[in-house]
Amino acid sequence: MDLYSELAWRGLVYDETEGVRDALAAGQVTGYIGFDPTAASLHVGSLLVMVVLAHMQRAGHSPIAVVGGGTGLIGDPSGKTVERQLLTAEQVERNVEGIRGQLARVLDFTSTTAPARLVNNAKWLTQLSAIDFMRDVGKHFTVNAMIAKESVKRRIDGTEGISYTEFSYPLLQSYDFLVLHDRFDCTLQIGGSDQWGNITSGMDLIRRVRGGKAHGLVMPLLMTAAGTKFGKTESGTVWLDRSLTSPYEFYQFWLNADDRDAVKYLKFFTFLDAARIGELEAVSGREPEKRHAQRQLAREVTRLVHGDDAVAEAERSAASVFRDELTGAELDAIFESVPSARTPLVAAGWAVPALLTASGVTASNSEAVRLIRGGGISVNGRRVSSEKDRLTPDQAIDARYFVVRKGKKERFLIRIEG
Image (tube, rainbow, N blue to C red; front, side, top):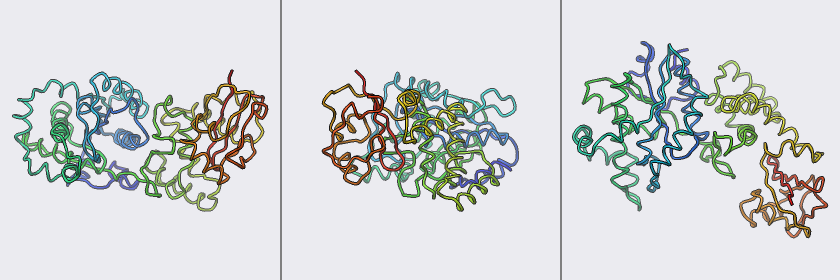
């Protein structure tokens, strides 16, 4: 299957410029996607574009991952209602290094036939003088056209406005496309649908300065079936770095996907073919309680990001922590792999809401009280009946562990130390 058809059946084509499909069918195309280094790790939302680059490479095209070490110093206003906090050059460079290894898990940078490249736009943007930028790039854009872009217009119409710094961002991204076109014969930029204006600006710059033809393709912005932003949980962002989101938590995120989202996520985030995904959709429809699609999704994506050992570890930990009868030794073995916290020994014991909040099980005492009153908290297999209940060391497993069940799906370990 050609790349365009592959992306289309997976639902990954939201819009494209004229001629994209023909260009991809005519021969090897070099295309790029940009990654914003605002954190030391990418998150599950970034994983979607990583997989698209991998589809490019599998189809025989040459993908470029551009890490925005230069543009990251400015900040993209797309989809933002307020100005971003500017990062220092040192912060951006640390973040770039963290992202490098995550991209290498998905892309093959050693291929000789369809090479993947990783480049940092700081190499050319930090060498660009203000005068050169205004003469060679700025003169090709009208303020009228820039103000008309949705990402800018939304900020101008809002209460915060937009600084000249962020207003300049589309021009910097356009210059990226021009540099990649000159250095690597890059003729395609891919991104989320919120990047459409930035992508077409780059295409225009290539046409005006080089007389060249370039293309753009954008993917739909991903929302859950419940209408919430994908990749966010009660605990926060789901990161690709295992030190920020453990393989167990990562696996559980996918395993707990809404039935309405599971098949869509299989298409978006895995390389399973249409026949296999169709099988999983059919069996999930017959036996939804067994979560066949979610289980396969969790395995595939965890394997992609963390490897086979992480899948085995996550499933072994889940099998243990969801059992009602556990020994202290078993809990010792999985403590570092599952959501867990330590609490100092208090001979008189702990008020349950205070312990849950201090351990990160709940965000506040009021949330803990609400869950307890709704019957949503159990400790060591026994439901907590009142927010006034206390836990004492002698109630802990081996005098060391509390296994907290929050709702139907979440488990936490609290270990007494001292």
